[in-house]
Image (cartoon, rainbow, N blue to C red; front, side, top):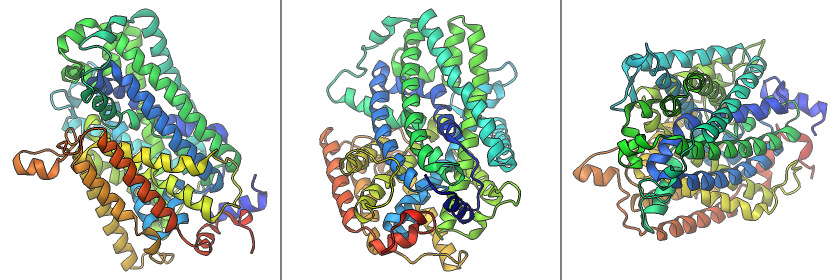
Length: 569
């Protein structure tokens, strides 16, 4: 536990009030995990993998739990705001830190508009809201897009009120968000469960061959919104600089939030498949045809309840479809502003992102910019189904920085106090890095290329900030410790390009354009592709460990937040 003296020191360093307790941290993570993912993910995953999507959820849950455990150790060590954007900086310096920090910012800024889209899409099922959503294109209409932007503006206002008020509000919202899926699970299992659905349209293993079944199950993990649904455990880490007792509370909040989320989502998927009307499945002809059913694609759980005659449950689910995503969107707008705060503290972007209000210590400028960036995500892709894969890839690339940081810090700073020590961390960390690369690979070339375009934009912006000296703390460029970063991304991109997961992304085309942009034509046989991804990931992991910062530089980077735990030599 930090002493009060150091707590005050860190509070001064961070410029934010430490008012959030364990349940505030737990519910911040849980509130972002239980969002629109449960409202749309079950349908999207079923359309891709049929009842076998249950395996997709279990595989994704195991992967995310491994990544969460890595974050639990780092979160206990470094109770800093925007933690996921700063761990690689401590271990590998400015170049690696800027790269992973931008991935972190991209995913956080994009989640708020996705949640707003989800809420407005469900609103379209009301008697007055049909004009908000176009079921043929699975996108919001122009009017629906404006309503989504208005909802994001509400997120901004709530954030500016202050983090303490937000924590209290979020506790109530998250309690509601956890109760409603559990209620739906119980009602569907007890009242409207059709066991025969699990053998419909080819049975549990949708696709039928040794190649197509595994591919469908793995493809559903990023493209069916499964990983996206499970994202959010890091929100407790992002609020580390505002935690009252971070060393004790951060690890517990991270671990418990993901365990609760995995259990709920697996049961949600099971109940959804069982609750579908057999006539709905027959009408769709295949599991993949479910998303072409207009009302079902716009409001999956609401429609299932309505068709089952559970009108009272349908009404509650539609209400939850506004409250649940809104709560998650509010959390991620907060997170995006705190990540940009962290990027500024590390010297990557202008100091304006650090400025906070006198009374509530809220980074207003950072919140406003996160709102603007969210709009830029929303306008070209006003669809939950179109944005989810891109956000998943950005998120997992961000998460990949944590295992690398943990491995490096275990080597360079073994004496640092670790309130939560990950068992067999030297083994778990490289495994976590490999698993993260698997998910990025399954996202496909079209998604990966779009994310890389976003990275290039971020690097250009940070270069301009550096060149114009918009932040006096701009760090030296630690190229030597980051020589592996761009080879990693380029090599992974080549594997994805020649791999098996090129279609279904947000970029399409025909002829030569399709060949150039979409890729994923299956040149690398299935199973061999995973072996190649694993081998490349392990090569990069151990190269990164070798190239980590010298201990002296690591001490300099973490001195402001780990004063008492850094030994004096």
